[in-house]
Amino acid sequence: MLLIACPHCGPRAQEEFSYERTTDSVVTTEAAPDAAMTALFTRENPRGVAEEIWRHTYGCRGWMVFRRDRISHAISDIRPLGPEPLA
Image (cartoon, rainbow, N blue to C red; front, side, top):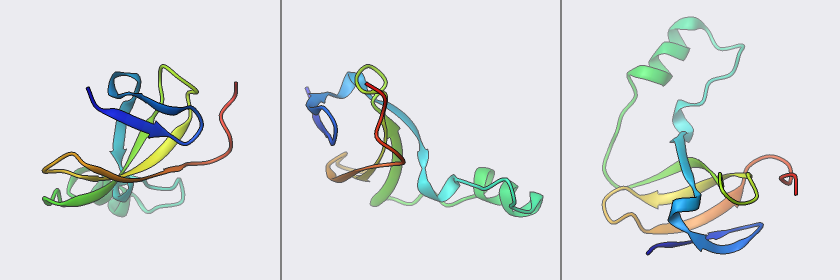
């Protein structure tokens, strides 16, 4: 079982977390339609380390950014995304 170190709750089982997307696929509401479509649907998916957005769905419900190797699945960094989650 993989333990993930939630910045708010401490080490928790991987099953408590949900993957959302890579950080390079986040678009703002002000983005031009062509740029938004490119970021969402035609972006690269290279091997190696990527920053991904995850949610501690069955814990604090907080959003966080994982720096994760897509080959070995090793997580090298986790940081909170946005304000503190609600208790």
